[in-house]
Image 1 (cartoon, protein in one colour):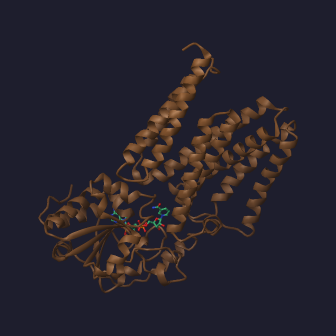
Image 2 (image 1 turned 135 degrees about the vertical axis):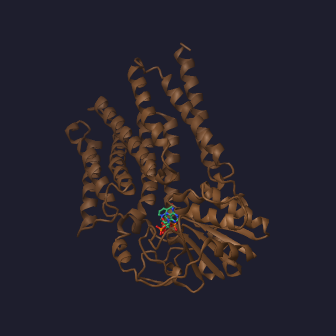
Image 3 (image 1 turned 45 degrees about the vertical axis):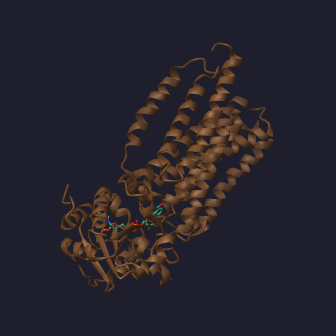
Length: 466
Ligand code: NAP
């Protein structure tokens, strides 16, 4: 394909197909039954986008591109293999890399064009570089907090919001000045440096519990900066992909904030999680009722209706396959089993759906919070497997609780509640759960996978430790 016009047309067609695949990918990923297809579509779209870009006639030497591809693959493959529970911080790292490259491209474009940069181009480059830089450091900080290499607790000081907004305001002010005076290139580093500092300062006051929401918001910023880069490079594919990324990240942040009954401003400026350590320390030595796997199996086997509520602990223990065995063993005995899925159970949206789908639990047995909540008063037994915050009744009535107002699964309305967890440790919000002290609650202490396996064995299924 040596004719440049034919090559250009071929590249444009490749980009068009890639854009359609990205849109279909998002659509398919919104349901568990089509999610795998959605991931494949995204992968093929990205391969086409990279392939099309490699044909670009502006590339005269492929050596640097080859080095970048090899290094990128060497970093990307191990990143893709991380454990499911580490996916939020892995995603944050991807945003950081993407935002870093966007900033570098924007910087290169500016210095290639200065002193004659049109006001439109300067606005686009400034937006690209500001969003890219703050997303870079913000995402690194978020990944560090989630990986617990940085302190999870929010760090606040007086006048913090004013200081942070002033830093951002300086960057925006300089950007506006540059739009009218693009020849003052010595000011350009300021619109990189200030947002880099702002990215760090923005994350410092946000607690670990809000990090997944923030990461999704940073995803949105990374998308917007990529869309701005699309204008700078005149790439329709980048504009489309960036806009999709920007809008889907924003929608996801809104959904997550709603599920936790938090406003955006509250997530970004509210220093949620501040009470974590003190609330955990206040745990009273109240007594709880415990039961063995044999007793739990007896209660479950005698029930008519059981709702299983999975949470982060099921993910950590990788108990989903044992949970399927339990589901089958109870079904065999004629017990009706459903799953109650809270929108923020686990550590990322859809976490429980992904794990239970992997274990081949039928999708129609997974009920969202709104669908399952009215059923709890009619439910004989609720079996909570490694969930905690999403079942805490304090969210409904205790105004001093950090999770007050968060919609929860009304498990305490069922006749009997059984909770599998290893001890009395709190969940992500760092607070005690009053559910454990109710008369109707039985604590089943142990690792989720082992305990569920033991119950299955008692019920006569394959079960046992693996
Ligand atoms: P959680 O409140 O974090 O509680 C998980 C429980 O699992 C812990 O209390 C822990 O108790 C237990 N556990 C850990 N490892 C276990 C194992 N191997 N076997 C058995 N139990 C184990 O979890 P959740 O109820 O799923 O709530 C999710 C939390 O994350 C919420 O606060 C939510 O707001 C937050 N969050 C989620 C998202 C999201 O997108 N999903 C986003 C932002 C924030 P032991 O240590 O005693 O075993």
